[in-house]
Amino acid sequence: MSSPSIDGTTPQSSDAASPAWADLSTVPTGLRSRILAAGVDRLFRRAARKLDVRVEYPDGTVIGSGKGSDILPRMIIRRPEAYVRRLGTHGLIGFGEAYMAGDWTSPDPAAVLTVFATKMANLVPRSLQRFRGTFVTRPPASERGSEENTRSNISRHYDLSNDLFELFLDETMTYSSALFTEPRSPAQQPARSSILVADHPNPPARWEQLAGAQQSKIDRLLDAAGVRRGTRLLEIGTGWGELCIRAAERGAIVRSVTLSSEQQELARRRVAAAGFADTVQIDLLDYRAVEGEYDAIVSVEMIEAVGHKYWQTYFEKIDSLLAPGGQVSLQAITMPHDRMLKTRNTYTWVQKYIFPGGFLPSAEAIESITARKTTMRVRERLSMGSHYAETLRLWQERFGSRRADALELGFDETFCRMWQFYLAYSEAGFRAGYIDVQQLVLDRGDILAKDILGRDTV
Image (cartoon, rainbow, N blue to C red; front, side, top):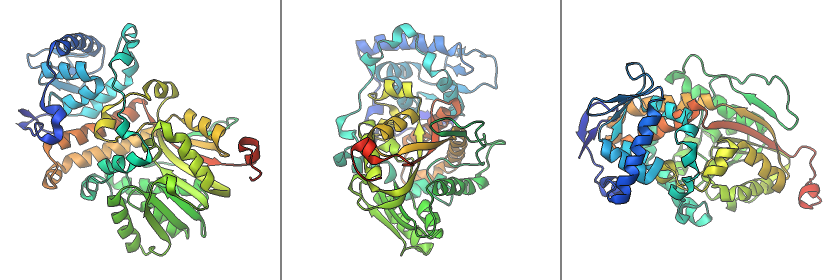
């Protein structure tokens, strides 16, 4: 079976029939698949006619609101029947799998996906949306964020290979949103929390700016948590050690926990090379097993891996570890609350192929859980979704330019298409505002624990 290259232009051999990609090797068949495919084909073509995208078919058909324009994002349907059968049978999982299999391609998949993400709520007619629950797949129990499953979930992504991540990350090895500019001050202070919006990176960020922007993001989180000389800092979710290093440079005593053996190994080496092996401890440990008391707790884009059934456990654990007067700073990818409620029991392409067990919270869910179940309150929120879009654009460009290196490492063409789709899909979500990323600051303030949990301590 042949398929286009990663840029969607040059056909070449495919490895989708490999055992590693069993769900891609066979296009859905049977009467049900044929009926669903016919319906999806009509819905897709009708929706595409209203979108600012150019959908091209092998027979020369072109669909889109500006179908004669060459400047619109191009979506090239190379195998129409396979495309609609996957989409009809497996929904949005099938949409991503169709890209992985080469059924559709694009020279700029992020641009195409941004168009779809912007109109996501209206792509399916309202009269059919009530049947959504009949067709969506539920997440498998084996991927829930329990202590039994979490190590495996994390390993499937973060233990792929440190060399793979080095292909597209900057020298700080930071795998989360950068912050390219300082946030502007809020026009007014809301009653419950200060809500800020980071200025949009303009002009577009350059690769040379990324490392500094990652360090700026880390420094803001450390500042928000009050990290200074002598601070006992807990980091939940190590990454590859950059936050540990920058905290240690301030004179903090750092403990960091991760469930990725690959991350632990490289983070320890980077910490030692920076001269902080005596003040930074990196443990292979589930957050639920952490003990002790810490003046500051920082967690960067880790809550997404917790799973909504365990958010209460996560925040209760942080609350139990936080010393009197301590502060918490989180960076979290979020989605609107109503969308979160509708999708929390849906199995997605990202969960199946990229982050098993993951699910994005809403800012409202975080505020509600912490208010009801802990002594902590959200005091400040910084929205910086446009910065993640820029971060992902740079990662995607870098990965695309080093595709040959990924193949040399042993990753095949299907993996490269999957990884490109993941980065493009994520960038599109932030560009469209479908998802956001926020830094949140929590503390206890003057709230008494006894008023919330019946305790006599602050």
